Length: 206
Image (cartoon, one colour):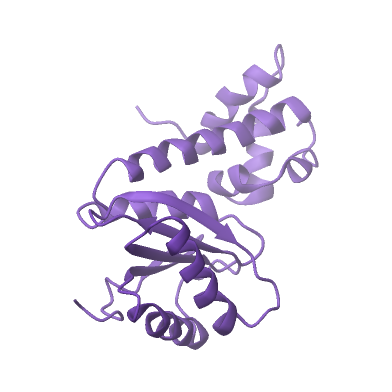
């Protein structure tokens, strides 16, 4: 038998708030943030704004999010990402979809399409069309990578790529082509889903 979202939170909160009926607190958390995933994405300060949630409970909730992220990262690193693309999607959605600001992730791959490492950057207001290709080339060289997956989030929650996203992807493709650095995908993530440039045939096939 499955659990309702508030029941899962209720079970967790019993460890942070002993000897108290925590069902109302669990329901208030779901009501305040809208969903279980949004509760996990909330920062401790936001969580503690809900009556009955203290530092211990807020920390427990954040630890669950970090454990889930670490688990999905290990699953992604243990396989060929072209054969198991969902492993990448699961990890990047867990890692980035709750960010309150736009961030980019570069996932570096070896010649067998296995994950070497990943890097998250936030460029703020700089010209991404100029900065990102240079950062990507520097990162790929330092990691001895032969392939790359680009990922970025939309804080608005929507996952459809903008014209700027498409233009930036083309600029990156042009900058990396002479280095024989393969761009396997560009994934846009939001709370309501994800968009894959590869799945939608917006990347050139080799």
